[in-house]
Image (spheres, rainbow, N blue to C red):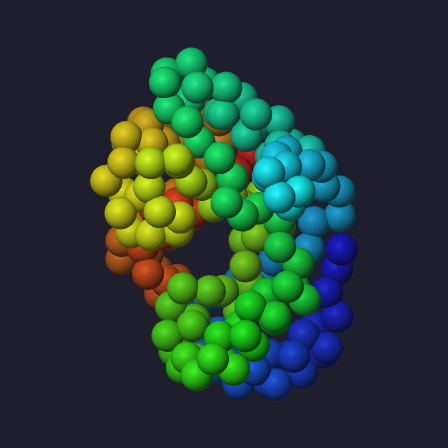
Length: 176
């Protein structure tokens, strides 16, 4: 799905996110995925969706991890621009500074989750979306094997996008 750039700019401005801030961090926009399929349904019924190609790659990665005794699950996958706006607005309403929010959340229109190729990964033995994920056997397995399935760690320590290190956030890139 293409994004109305004027509407997006108005939404960003409404959140206090300037184009200068985006440019200073070198962020690039991501269009929302058009075709998605469910790759995981949580016990509470929440569905996690990826593009068909990323979904197939995730299933292969997930199966290989299980064969190696590593249990992985998706904590978050596709997320649309409207949902990203809600997340940031909720944090602003709770009194968080925009700078603090944008250290951990991409601006609407600029999240890899919009592409339908990104996953936030969890494991049963560790709290979700915490830096401690980097110390788990699951993370060590991903570092060794995720590339075989086209998944890349998007935000390692010191990443150029200016996000805090997110050892749980991996994005599928077409092998080539």
